[in-house]
Amino acid sequence: MEKQVFFEEYPCWIVLLANAVSLAVYALGAFLMFRLGVLWLLAYLLCVIVLEARVLKKSCVNCCYYGKTCAFGKGRLAALFFSRGNPKSFAKRQVSWKDVAPDFLIFVIPVAVGAWFLIQAFDWVLLGAIVLLLLLGFAGNAFVRGSLACKHCAQRRIGCPAEKMFSKKK
Ligand code: SF4
Image (cartoon, rainbow, N blue to C red; front, side):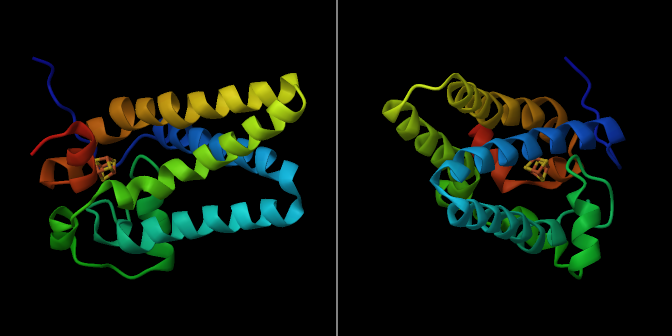
């Protein structure tokens, strides 16, 4: 059986790779939303900021990586902007599909927008952006979480409702 390794602080290359995937998803999402106009692009970017800030404020402040380097570097970011929460509440939090839906919608909506434009007029660049966004949104995120982030996460050992939900543990 493979020995589990939990990081006290994640190595920089994981933080860089995890953020590269997230930033690529947001950049492709912004590129596709821009097809609707500048206002839609700005609305999309605002949603990204709200989504990220929500994670920092609601989850990261209670995580054992608060003030430390987690797989996404958010433990350190959270400590910069928000005060420490209650570490005991992290594992107790109820997480449902409704809570994680925004994480999917942030790339599914741009994909739908891109597909709509693609139906109007075929465009290889548009098709490439849609395919890449789908790959990064599903496979890229799954790889980052499954093979890099959650796999070595000390908070998972203590208890993480999101990880439990995705791995369907009871
Ligand atoms: S187990 Fe995964 S989802 Fe849970 S805190 Fe760790 S990295 Fe985040």
